[in-house]
Length: 374
Ligand code: CMC
Image (cartoon, rainbow, N blue to C red; front, side, top):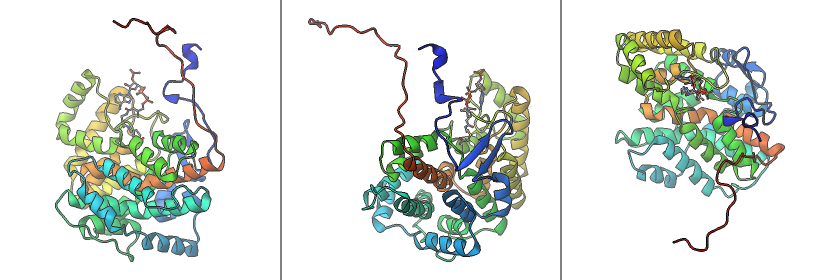
């Protein structure tokens, strides 16, 4: 095997087919089940997009009513899970809380190992309904606050704000959040989805696949970038300091968070929509300084390197202005991507082949175990 046969990072390798979403590298575009993601963000709610991702079609009014009623009825988590979350170290990373909660939900589901579309759909919908409750409990406990029970009368996004802050903000804020949920929902064979598919390919269960995907998403080269962007902007401070900060970071060979993409090399089609949502948040909160920093930083870095922002660049500061703690940004990403992950898990299960690539060995030549090991 030559070095050219090795596809480090699986870059450019097509490993399977999928009907869930399409990424077109040449035009930097993304469609879910055939619909451009920016059109979905402009015209739909996250609930409609979740339905689309699982069912292949947008729901009729009656289908949406039935689907949202099912989601609302499953939002509450059991007391043992609440106690489990409250007992975890307060300084642990919230993605470990999410991973623990997903593993717990698997442990108490008598159908955890039941395969097939119907059983998996039920598990996927339960996770979609309960992840916001889990994230909200964790968000509040870090501020010494008791959980706020989920409502059954508020839509998905408004209910999440209610559970985190005990109040629902202005409609524009809720809509910005909903748009971020739509944009984060699905992205073909990204690292966390691929992780979920690898785990599923061994005929392991959906909860195990999701827990593994949460682990993959946590890393800053993937989903962890949204919180890393905010931490970076806070470190930079103000627009006038961007240039010097970038000089120093590049001199130290640091990766700039929220820029670059394995697939999109000339811009990410989700960014203009999320940037507009961020600008709406800037207007609501009067955060002109943050916008000035955001613009100066982007202009400087893109000008130097020709590497464009990805979705995490506008979503990080948008979540900050919504009031969420920075370390909860990636768990919020999980709340959305659970839809894409589980659609892929079901797709993988429906036409499974064990995912087991090869490696080129470059260690010691074969040798004998010495009798005398001194
Ligand atoms: N900052 C500085 N240099 C960069 C960056 C960046 N953000 N992204 C790419 N480069 C450079 C890189 O150093 C390399 O340069 P050279 O050829 O001189 O060594 C060249 O561009 C190619 O980069 P790469 O790392 O080989 O490309 P990749 O396809 O393996 O990496 C990436 C893609 C997303 C891991 C990378 O761009 C990165 O680390 N970005 C920062 C983290 C980030 O924003 N992640 C979120 C990704 S998108 C949303 C998601 O998945 O959740």
